[in-house]
Each structure stands twice: as C-alpha cells, then as structure tokens.
Figure 1 (spheres, rainbow, N blue to C red):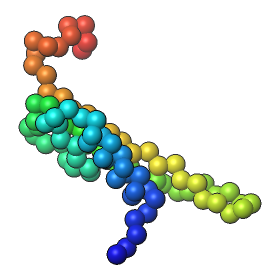
Figure 2 (figure 1 turned 90 degrees about the horizontal axis):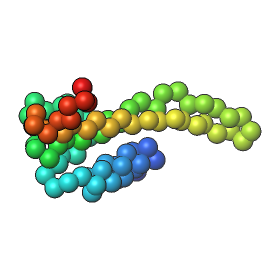
Figure 3 (figure 1 turned 180 degrees about the vertical axis):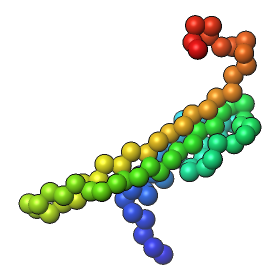
Figure 4 (figure 1 turned 120 degrees about the horizontal axis):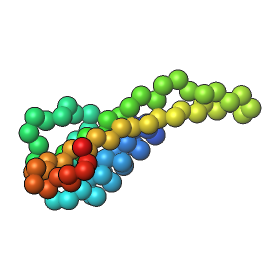
Length: 87
C-alpha cells in the first residue's frame, strides 16, 4: 500500500474537519466543479491548490513549501432572507 504524502494527509484531515463542522444536509466535496443545483443546506468545495516551487534552506538542507488550499462555500438563500444593504 503506498503511503500518503504529508500534504495529502493534511488535505484529507481538513476535508474531514469541514465535513464535521457543516450543518446536516450540506455537502463537502473535494476538487469538484460547482454543481448547478446544490442542497438547501449548502455546498463546500475544498480545492487542493498548488504547492508551487519550494524555498530551499541550505544549512541543514530543508525544502519549505507554502501550500494554500482554497475553500468555496455556497449557500442557497431566498430573496426574502437577504440583507438589503449587502449587495
């Protein structure tokens, strides 16, 4: 069985944290396209992002990645519940 990278383990942990924090009925997806029609409770999409090129430190040799995943949150709200001054 191949071992997961540190980044993959962290992204999987973040996905499970988001899943546990969402209200019942909300979907938490990973690297998915935004659905045309989502559940009334909302949709959260976790995107892995790109770690880019590492920054190298020479003594001792260490490679530092700054990896920023993106989180999209979409909630369906009726027009009667909108705040009038928030456009």
